[in-house]
Structure formats: C-alpha cells, structure tokens
Length: 393
Image (cartoon, rainbow, N blue to C red; front, side):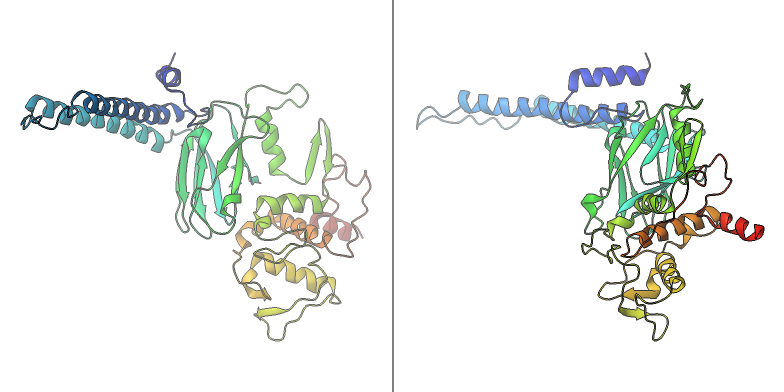
C-alpha cells in the first residue's frame, strides 16, 4: 500500500467525523491528515484542560472561611512543559501543512490543462479539443490543471470532494491541480463559488464529473470520458451508437446559453432579473435608456434583419444599447462567440433560441433525412449548408 493510502486509511479509521465529505482526489490525504490532526489535538487538550479545571475546582476548593491559600509562586519544570510541548506540536502541524502545500501547489508535467472562466453567476470550462461546458468533466486517475480567471468580479472555485479551492481574479491567471481517484455518481461532485460575488452568489454552483478513461464501451468502442469529450466538442450532433443526428439550433442554443451563464441574469419565464427576460423579447417594442446610435428605435414591426442584428450586437457588445430600466451590467461575449466558424454557429444557435421564445416563432420544419448527420456533411440550419445550397443554385 502507498504512503498516501496508508495515511488516508489511518486518518479515516481514527478520525472520521461529519466535517468532510468522502475524499475523491490525490490531495485529500494530506489535507485530511492536517485537518484531523488539528481537530483531535484540540479535542485532546480541551478534555485535559477542562478536566483539570473541574478536578482542581473540586479538590482545591475553599473548605472554611479561615483557610489560608498556599503561596506557591511558580514551577519551572511545569512551565517548561506547558511552553515546550505546545511549541513542538505547532512545529509538527506547520510541517504537515507546509509539505501538503508544496504538493498542492506543484502540478506534475503530464497534466491536462483546462481553462476556467468565471462570471456572474457561473463557470465555463474550456478543454484542449475546443469543447466547452458549464460543468467540469475529467478523467479518472489522470492529473488535471485548471487555469482560471474571472471576467467581472472576484470569484472562487471550491471542490469539497477534491479538497481544493482557489480564487478567480479579474485580469489575473490562477491555477489549481488535482488527480481524481474516484468515479463520480451520475450527478457529479458539487463545486461552489466561495467568494461573495453579488445577488445570485448562492446559486453559483456547478458539478464535477469524473469518468473512466480506460474501459472501452463495446457498443461505441470508446471510453466514457472520450465519448463525453466528443459530445461536448460538437453540441450540434447527437450520437446513438453508429447513428448520428443533428440537434435543432434552438435546442443547442438553450444548452450553450446555460453553459455561458446567461440564465443567471435572464429568465425565460417572464420574471424580472438583472437583465431583460428572454420570454417574448423577440419582436417586442423596446425603449432604450442609452444607444450608441442617435434616434435608434426597435419595434415589433421592424424587419427580421434588424432584430437579428440587435440581438447579435447585444450578446457580443451589450453596452452599446441599454434597454430601460436595466443597468449596463452585462459582460461582453465577443471573445466567447467570435473568432472561429464554430463559435459563430454557437452564437447563431443562441439567437435562434431567443427567437424561439418570441410570440410568433415558427420552428424550421426539417425532415429526418435532413437531420441525418451520417448523410449530410453540414447541419441544415448552418451557414455552411446555406452556402452550399446557394452555390448549388
């Protein structure tokens, strides 16, 4: 058995309490050992000190009014003991914590690097294959380093089962690393923001999914982790064995909006939020408290082209036009939805989802054959498909 395994078993055999969840990473053994060491040292000395106090109160109580108290001034050996012993204990605790800190802060060279971007009120995780998600997906027993930043205010990512936490700071890059040691349940391990970041701080919760990356699924020929990464890399395609089917843009848009944290400020049921509700937003008269274009108006009778241009601009550069009575609080999403054709298609999907919440939305009528990804190289709602059709005509 490894040193970490022995320490973990000994720690949890002697010191299991309700304070910490079950460990699920390589960092947990050092953190738990230090935590429970302090815990049980505190319990031991609490019992000794309070027990001695009770004993002395009873044994050395004043028994008569004329009883004289002894005039002992000090006891040198006792004073050395009660000063030296705590010093040695504190030095030991410092060493345990210092060694754990070094392991905690030094990632191995073979880590997989995942980008993390925090904004009010959610996280976006970016993977080496270009995939993005609002919940973290990692492989079992493979080291991972999270390179993290914030686009608005101070946030923090805390994963209790991994015993790891670090702040995400605007304009700075921070990182943490870990190696998952247990496959997660279907719902995943919980993760939280632990720095107060505004009105919906308590709702800034995500999940960490640890998937096996060794055992091949006989049906797909892929591991659970590889299959999930492929799914995240292309949200426009749904796989069922060998069958590949395109997903409607409005459904993809809903998923991407959730990943991007849009629902932290925008509701879809008409309720007021930090920003305007998306329900009925498309083709609705709007009043603006600020516009970069003098005399700009937007009404339900305006053309689809004008509405699409407004929604696109409001996602990429939201500060250019502010709907009354809301404040200019939204972070720009230009870096998230521009730069590559794939990002542009994701933006078009979000716009389609917003349109679908309007009063007169008519979904595209696409046949099963058109949505068959095995037969068609392009999604029928994509710009590539439209360009191919125009070229054919």
